[in-house]
Length: 68
Image (cartoon, rainbow, N blue to C red; front, side, top):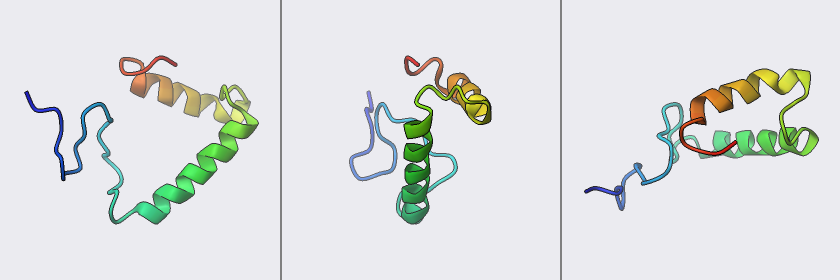
């Protein structure tokens, strides 16, 4: 059984990145993290009208992986 790659980009228990590369896109990922933290500080349950679509996308993407 393979649980992950020690030096690779695949890790056990972490969803696959299909959009970003951790090594080349680190600055963009930091900016996205900052935006996410700002959105969640204002709307932790993602219930505001402008966040409903995001809430549904997260729910659909991760419904079998995490408890939301």
